[in-house]
Amino acid sequence: MNGSGIAAVITAGVIAVLFILMILKGKRDRNSDIQKKIRNSWGSELPRLYSAEQISHIRRYSDSLDTREGAPAFCVIDEITAGDTALDEVYGTVSRTFSAPGDEVLYAWLRHPLTDPEAVRKRIALEDFFAENAAAREEAGRILCGCGRLRKASFYGALASLEEARSIGRGKYLLLSAVTVLTFLMLLVRPVVFAVLAAPVLFIDFRVHLGMKKVIGESLAGFQAVLRLVQAAREMGAMPYPEMTEETEKLRRAAAAFSSFRRGSFLVMTAGSVGSGFSDAVLEYANMLFHADLIRYDAMLAAYRTHEKEAEELFAVLGSVDAAISAASYKASGRLFTRPVFTDGTAAVFRAEELYHPLLNAPVPNSVDTEREVLLTGSNASGKSTFLKSVALSAILAQSIGIVPARSYEAPCFAVFSSMALSDNLAGGESYFVVEIRSLKRIWDAAQSGGQPVLAVIDEVLRGTNTVERIASSAQILKALDRRNVLIFAATHDIELSYLLEECYTNMHFEEHIEDGDVRFDYRLRTGRASSGNAVRLIGAAGFGPEITEAAERMAKHFNETGEWRF
Image (spheres, rainbow, N blue to C red):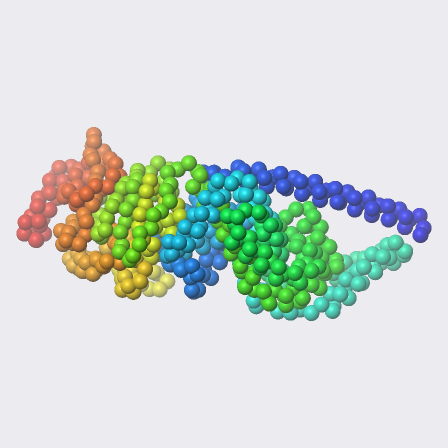
C-alpha cells in the first residue's frame, strides 16, 4: 500500500472514531433530555394543542376500531357527540403521552368508552400503579420515547400500509450496491478511476433510491415502526413489576415472533420515517449509497405478513401502557377528580357531586342525583349547554380513562349520545331541521335496541321548526324516550314542555339576576322550572325602553290567558 493509501486508511479511522464518539455523546444527551421530559411532564397542567392534520393521523387507529367487535366491549362516540363535547380538545388536556402508539391508543380510548366495568377497573389499576411507582413510569416512559413519532403520518397507518405493499425484488439493488462498493475501493488503489466513476455512480444510486423511496416509502415507514415496537417490547417485557405481568407477557410473546424480521434490519431504521438524530441521518445517506433497506425489503415484508396480529398487539399494549401513564399524570394535575363507581344492571341512573366541565379554568360545579329524565330550562348563557356537556363528558371519561371531573360519580356504563351544536348540511342538501331529525333518530334507535343503557344530552329539541309543531313533536319524542334503560338530559326554552312532561321528567333550571342594570349568572343548577318573564326582564336590562318591555309583557300575558297573539 502506498503512502496515499495509508493516509486514507488513517483518515478513515480517525473519522470513524469521531463518529462513534459523536454517537455516544448524542445518545447521552438524548437520554438526559428524555429523563427531564418524563419528569417535567408528570402532573403537568398545560394542554397540548393539536392541528386538524395531527388529529387526522392520530385518529387512524380509533377509526379502525369502529367496525370491529369490542374485546372488551365498547361503545362508539360518533362524530356528532365528539363535536358537541369538543372531545378532540379534551384529548389535548388529557394527553401526556411519550409515543405515537400512546397518542393513538389514548385517542381511541376516548372515542370508544368501555361498557364492561371490570375492564375499566383494570385500566384504573394500571394507572394507579404508575401513579404510585415513579421508577416504573420513568423506565416505561424512557422505553416509549424510543418508539418515536412518525413525521406527518399515523403510526398505525404505517403498519396498515404493509397489508397492501408489493414486492420489488432485490437483484438490481444488490448489483448497484456492489458497483458502489467497488467504486469506493478504487479510492484506495486507483484514485483516478474513483474520480471518474464517483459522480455517475452516486448520481445513479441517489436517483434510483429516491425514486423507489417514493414508491415504497410508506412501507419502509411501516417496517421502521415495527422495529421500534419490537425494540420497545423487548425492553418493557423485561420490566420486573408484578403489576405489569399481563402486559409484559404479551409483549415478550409478540416480540419473539419477529426474530427473522429483525435480522439485518438495523440499517432500515433511519430518520427517513422514524426517529431523529445525527446517527439516523448518516444511516439514511448510507442507504442511498448501498440500498440496504431496498435489499431487505422483500424479506422483511414476507416476515411481517406472517405476524400481522402480533404487530398490532405490540402497538395496542405499548400504546395502552403509554395511555395509562398519561391518564395517571392527568389525574395528578391538581384538579378535583374522582374514580367512577359503576352500578349494576340496566337501570339508567346518574349521581355526581360537584361535577364540572374539564375544559373550563374556573368552573362552577353542580351536583345531580337522578333516576328520571331531566328537563332544563333557563335563559341563554345561563349554563344549560355547559352542564349538558359536563354530563356527557363525565360518562365518556369515566368509561375510558376511569377519571371523572367531580367529587363523586355513580352510574352504569352508558352508550353516550348528544344532539346539540347542529348545523345545515349544505353539501348533502339537508336543512337544519332534517339534520336535527336524523340526529334525534339515532338516539331513538339506540334506545330501541334494549341493550346498553343510553345516556343522551339534547339541547333545544327541534328548534328548527315553528313553535306549535316543535312543542308537540318534542313532547312526544321526549316522552317516548322515557324508558328504564335510557336517561335523557334535555334543555329547552319552551316552558310549556316543563308542564307537559312533568310526570316523567324532573324539572331543573339555571337562572340569572339583574344587578345595577346588568345581567349576572351564577351557573348554579336549581330544582324546578325557570320562572317566566326572564326574557322580558333581560330585554329591559339591555337598555330597551319601557315602551317595548311593557308592551312585550302585555302580549305575553294575553297569549297565556287566551292562546292568541295580539299586538
